[in-house]
Length: 243
Image (cartoon, rainbow, N blue to C red):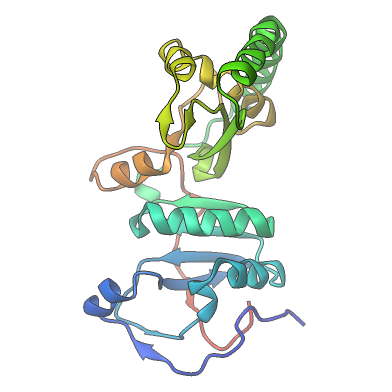
């Protein structure tokens, strides 16, 4: 029997637009076939889920649930996207950004070939620029002590959220002189070749977005993107059934 991620479903409340403003941490949850959809609040009967207010609790709920992946709506905003992405990462559950099917690009039958080209190109480039990367690491240790790498959320193929690896160019939110020079020539992005090797990013295909860009792009009526995981029709609202 599946284990429920919900400790209690008492204290149901009606969601209104005013409550949506005052209770920004809450959202509508829908599920089907092990996929959890996280959507903006609507005027529906919803259970109060304390786990949505605390990342540690949400991580534990996701870890003990049979959910295979999480699909989240960009309309929830950057803060909630980051909150759910951090929780899913810690719970080792993949998370995707969901967009309407009308904004999905057609399937690309040559994707496997493109993936092979990306892998070979990234591997060759890493071999070529490895002295540069090692030199930058030494310079950063001398002139910019602190963390060498930072990992920022990006939206990639089919809307999958992943951590892009970059050289850290700031300390306490201030860019360093070395970081400014690296950013000018794009050297801070060299570690993202490892993301290409992992299949998170592409050198020859479409680009990826930051969470902020994804939220802004989703507000446009005619954008085109291949972020959709699957159509959202025939989904059941979350009720007393287990996830």
